[in-house]
Length: 114
Length: 114
Image (cartoon, rainbow over all chains, first blue to last red; front, side, top):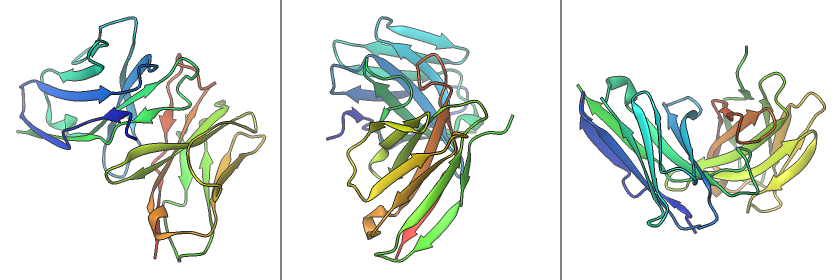
């Protein structure tokens, strides 16, 4: 039972344009969401997070939007750069937990075309 | 400051054998979580240790076990290996496991069962 879903396995975007990565979840108990980025042969690294009391969080080129009624969140990267090419994972957790127990999606491979 | 270190990086084992993987967290971090990453399944939570105690457990069979030592280093053990156990095993450490502190991942151990 995949509680966090990333329905696009891959995405290609031109350098300088906006990259939009999507994530849906089914567990209404999730109240904290995170995005991680993973390069080959490296562990995932934290990008940005959002609490369910917010609908937007911004950090430099990265913005995460949360639509609780649709159980949907998205990560926007503007402008996209070649170094952004990686696999992006959406993750979530419930009120009982912090970062120690995350439920991850299956990932979206983002390729930035120069 | 050294990052999260996982050893070994690569491992090949035969069905029926057992294996032990090691994770050294960032100095001062007391929470260590383990995840299994397989194609199409994303990262799935195995268990978390905090101050030498298993605090959380995912939905994996009893063949998967772990422990944490007084210096916060953690090991996970898989007994009676099956072909389906082939995966990238990642550990993540954080100060307390709470949301205010980022979880840092190691590079992972790639286990292949033949």
